[in-house]
Length: 362
Image 1 (tube, helix red, strand yellow):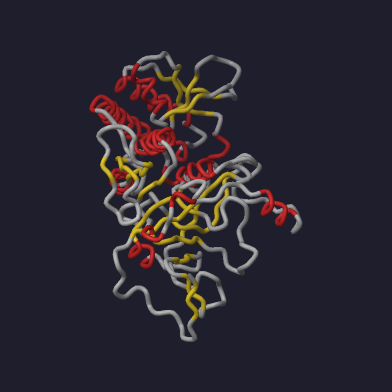
Image 2: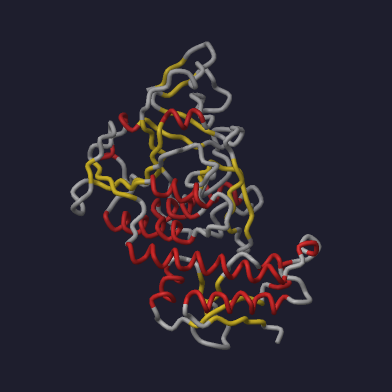
């Protein structure tokens, strides 16, 4: 229902109910894409992230990977009917989910969305038009942050957006809503991998872990046993589960890896000339890295499954994997290889896996 009023909208930061809201993501839309192509074939935010046929679940996963919502994602930076690109959310209690083709999206508290800068002016330039149960957010809000994503040329660029599972996020608790058990499992694996891949030396890693541990997934009720039925008004037809699923054995490997990383960094930094860092270009050392051969051992499997290492298809040696412990930016020309070799030795001692230094210029 649309409400029209002559006065300016009220200040929603005062006395906001603790209603929960849903932001539904959109699938790729060729009609929107064609509109922007007529404007000069402008690359769109999702061109490097998604296929042309990406559905709502694909779009949801892409945005969770980037830990934020980019207004206009996936098919453009602006909507045709408004000069401002917005992220719109609807009160959960007013949604008839049975009439939706897909329920994929994110769920958050109305009060936190308002605190992030959301307003009732859903259509920019029309403060007299309010839509019951709808709020809109745009990048002029103080909570906007740069969100990095892959451009069509596979380089990373950024755009202003609304941070989600990130310490800068305005949301203390976030829900991810999906259509099926299969999708819920995939989201749980995606977010668990993000949780395990966080390094203790990365700024605000602890805060990010807390956000991920508080997140939950909502899926149509009747799924796996042990899940709780949602008590959120409008979402009673969904069951909830934690977004993170780990075991004691997995967490022990995570702690072991963290200790080994810290030791390797401490040893490596003895070789680093900190005064030379700012004048040195780390891009010229992308071919030099600490690696190991995937031997199928439990620790090797863990490093790969947790996103702490990645396979390298170099056509030279099979099963080579690259590991990043955050020292590459401190490499200097004189002793760069010695620095990485010291780190490799420390990792080998800590993890019981053979590590080596690969340099394609050798």
